[in-house]
Image (cartoon, rainbow over all chains, first blue to last red; front, side, top):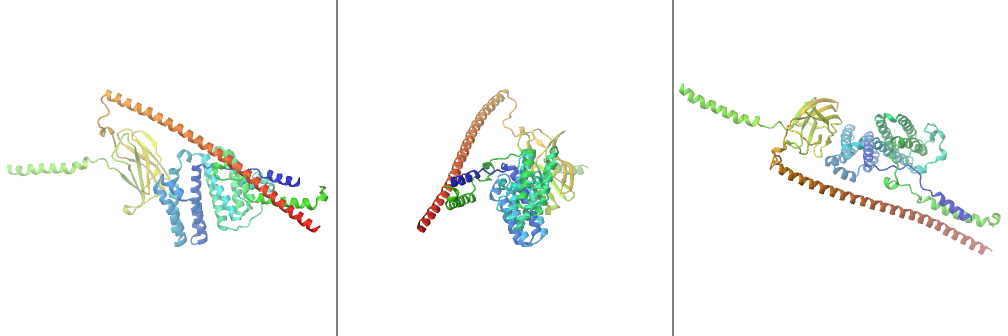
Amino acid sequence: MLLSAIIASGLIYTHPAFAHNFGGDESASWLAKMAEIRTETSIVAKHVGDKDAIDYYSDALGEYWNANDTREMGEKNTLLATEIPSTINATLDDAQKTGNENVVNDDISKLNGYLDESVPVRVDKDKLDNSTVQALAVVFVLKEALEKYGDAVNSTVDLNDMSQMNMSSMSSGQMSGMSSGMSMSSTIVDQNAYENSVGLATSAQSMFSDLTATNADKSAANTKITTAFTKLLQDLNGKADANTVMTDVHMNIHPTLITAYNVQEASESDTGYSTPAVPEFPLPAILIVISIAGVVVATRFRPRLGF
Amino acid sequence: MNKINQVLVPTVFSLIIATIIFVSPISVKPAEAHITKVYGNYIVQVGWDNEPVYTGLLNAAQVTVKKGSGDSAQPVINALKNMQISVKYGGITKPLDFLPSSTVDGQYHAVLIPTRVGTYSLVFSGTVEGQAINDEISLDDVASVDSLNFPPSSGSSSSDTVNMGQVGTLITQLTSDIEDAKNNADAASKGVSNVVQSFQEVKNTTDSLYMISMTGIGIGIAGIVIAVIAITRKSQT
């Protein structure tokens, strides 16, 4: 009986994850990608000659611009397909080898020009002017910021998975979007990832600021999200614990952004990002341990339990 | 006097002929293909992608922006970031969306089909890297496509009727083809949707089986532990 109860409780525990998953709109992805590359290269400019940092950002840039992006851009504009990756590489090379900040800044200026040029080539005009697409791009950049912050604090939970938030530790102030001023600070184990997460969050804040300029009719929501962004940046700068940062994004930014800008939440198959309904390791292992413990307890205290 | 005339007249005549020969190529030369203008330290060149230009044929307005002077001028990347450009014909204007060239840095194209013969111009309003440019620059004149047509498309009403009939047939055929393509696309979309649904069902089943197998393993291990305890107790007693 006891064993059955334990197993049943385990089965009940495996409820599907509850999270905000957003549709993978290609235009928004491209806008986000451009903002991410700009952010990474702007941080590279601060680390000219710092091999470790440049190696880190080389990996990050390799993630944001890969062979697939070159191929897709090549279908639209062969010059940009060649120049964007080669200018990224030139920026990294100059940052590492020449150590000359002026040369790196020239590279970045040129790269930013190409990135700007790529936007109307890759994104249709109607999508470019669409506030939902722009809001979705903000969400994508925020997602990257959370991922990097998770790496920075070596978090055991996926910060983009809302189901892994510790809801019980949230104060009512946090739930309502107000600053509680009380959050645990985290130890940064990866300074580059930390700096990257702050840079990306700042970029998302800037993108949202641009969005508000053309959406004055959503002033109430804009004010709320702007306040939430300010708190997020405060918490990131204050090295707040992962749960506080997750709360800032999942509870204070996303819901308002979704309703105000009609951002569509999508299924796992649309996003390519999945929150597994069945956790891969911890639960089965815990289930087995609990089962054994249950049997041991049951057999050892059988007389006292009355069976 | 006669002698003078005998020399002078042919000389003047020769000069007139020579002038006509040398000047005429200049006078009949079409309007300069690409116009270059300088604004501060920036050179702006405008023109058509394909010249000469004819009505009804796909073309594009072309703008190239460079910084500096002479051969050392460097292309300006993302030059039109803060620039609005419209095409103007008579009193009509239309804003153009320029896209970067696939081959030349600092060059931009806006696709356009000129529909009327005459002079078109580009109206610039904005800045290039802080340099204000508010100007109107004329493009090469557009000629009628009729000068290329053979045999002439206008004149015989019977030939027009034949042509219209052919166009009508073509349109009907195209409509039919588009409809077929649409049906095929719908069918493919439905097929993909079914596959996704099937895949999701398989995934759900797999998840359930995974859970059941893990539970089975748990029970199995628990059984082993019970057996070990039982054997241990038995050996103790």
